[in-house]
Length: 391
Image (cartoon, rainbow, N blue to C red; front, side):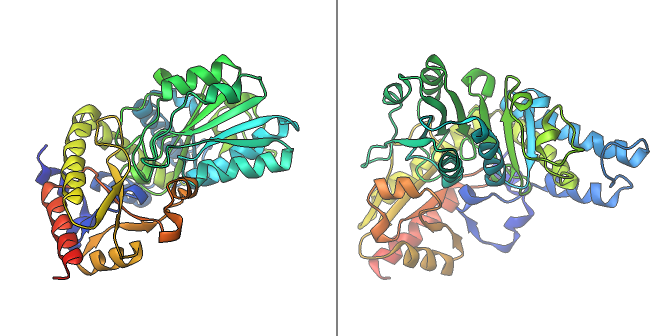
């Protein structure tokens, strides 16, 4: 599929803006939009579990969404839990886990992560009297060495490790296989935040070996929702907070109330769109564009890129600063040129602090997605060149 063919699938590009804001949420693909509308217009809308046709049709939409997500991330259908957002699911999940934590238990988080994989653990640990310790990143490029995890797990007190699959700021992906091996060697469970990873890098939870994986469909061209994939029977051994009549078995016991069935129709379509092109092929294209962007930024006087070097094992997202200008000023200028980026900490609080960027207002973030083109990259570089030169 050509770049023009891909871009034609995104109605949101019709306003002429150049979009580098994808790490915070991508535009929905046409088939996802259509699937949501088709469900809402059909005779199908009805609650679940009934004996009449409309209810059975809704059951089929939910089952289809579980199956599509399972194929996307290498899971089983009955391991896929839906919710209004990944953050919402994380608070529910950690709150339930904490019922079994004791004072002296340890949770390990990292400085690499989005706060949705930090604050839920901090608050649940506080309520249970458990402690939270952090794996630290390299303060220069923000990369994470997972080997120190061994020292935090060796005494057997660590119950859970919470780790980013890829940074939502710098794109860095730590050695997940090694992290999983260390956690499991010492009896700890591990949750991988795949929100910034799944849209860009091959992610098979069974091959990685993680116990839980989170992902957000609106980062891979679907509607706003959240997903937890919970493996190896954990769904049945952890008691969630739920209403008494809720189904006891399966992922539905974690889905508080009726799911947003119309959005699940859109999630199925988005997952199928993701799988139309082999992810390794798309990753190579995105990496090439990231290299064009990162090298171009480094050639502009006053611009500093913070993060790891370009490689195919990182997400195509980067942050940069402009000497003498705040990230907000850069963002505002680019917006005046109809170029969308983000500025600030983007909820990666620990990482911004560790890299010494808090006092400067964070950084500017730009991300490559499936509808990004080389012309988009060149337009961003040209705008920044004019901004820094005052022309």
